[in-house]
Length: 174
Image 1 (cartoon, rainbow, N blue to C red):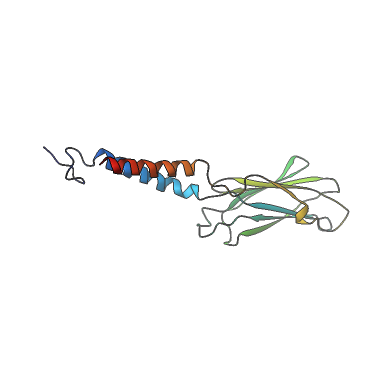
Image 2: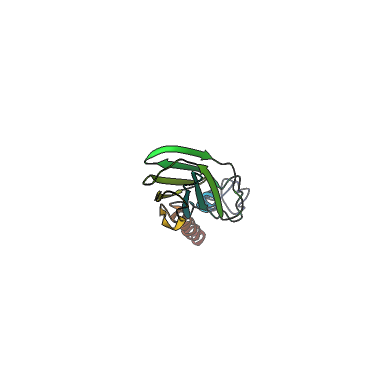
């Protein structure tokens, strides 16, 4: 009778069935842990300067200790009156939880401006505002924001819970 290489008490093969299952569950949990920790931007604030015809978009996206080349604000899309007018892509983000982008944008009173910021790993957040008055800056507080609020990748908790329960079940069987 041949014994397993990593499991001397096993009758056949390299790993016992339950040990292999536990190893696969742990591997799956580790693979999913990276994207699962990602989150969309938590806030987008807009300010329009009518005098200078510029839009300032401030995105709150705390990447913590993540690699900023992998986890960052990847793209900002700007719409004016439901028409795409600007799309900028970015390769990295400063470690600061807030990032500010400024765009040249002609707009008049009554124009609806919408900005949507995308995380390079998961999710997006958008805000919109209506241009008011002939000059000055519309305060960021008047911008409406929508989208997911700092959620982890869907299903991550379920997979992790299943991996833990499966590992506990398999360990008790042996």
